[in-house]
Length: 332
Image 1 (tube, rainbow, N blue to C red):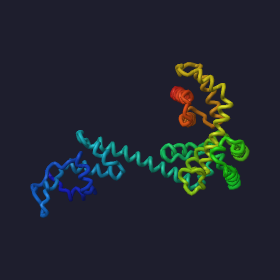
Image 2 (image 1 turned 45 degrees about the vertical axis):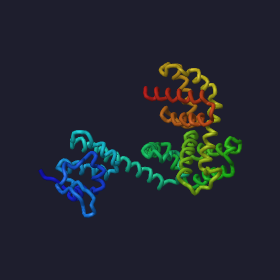
Image 3 (image 1 turned 90 degrees about the vertical axis):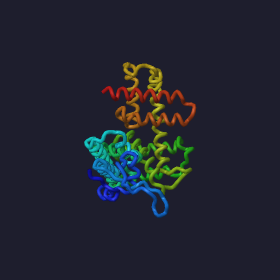
């Protein structure tokens, strides 16, 4: 049986001696050369490592996993304590390569959008860069939608300048003034801009602006700061406060009906009827047209209620609504 020394393994696989040491837990050498002893400095060594054909094959595949970006811990887990089956490992390699290809496609999708569109002027995209795959999927859906194409056709330099002018109108206000009439009037201008200039669903437009501006503030640090927050994030907060205040005022009776349903089985028609009324409100004020999209605003509300402290009933209500949305969303 042919045996391979460390130098040969390095040549075949491209792995370093350090890599071999890291993977030794799962791909150990089968034996060592009979040259154990002490070196010139008196340091003991156990003899040069030798690998058989199976060890070479495993290390070649470990090298492929490393090139795909897999962590050493995952590579060790793949090979340790299991009967070596090349087909299983090849399947894993194919899955990993497909995942990397999808990740690359997602990066290309997002990069193209950032290159082609001014990030502060994107009206229907959600820039949540912490979830690259989710962002790319959202962008693909949005950029292929008739509504988005209609928006972008009308989003010329004149429209963009009008939007920036509205943005600049928020400058000078503080967090304590988020619910003031003057800030609300600025949000009303955004609403008017969506309807009169772009001719789109203003609820969806406002929600898109809030999401994209909040993310823009996270990733663009040269924006003027106010009370440790940038102007884009302040506008995003102002939009959300505006939407939720009007949503709660208009939907008070619907929300009361939903509260009465707490504890009932989701499958009951009464729950479904109340939820449909609630979704109609969400669609009007936030542009969300299905249960999956609606869960986002419910989660945001839940977080806000938690931060406000003594809002346990409201948090419980948000949990119930999310549960009902998931039930009816999956039942279709």
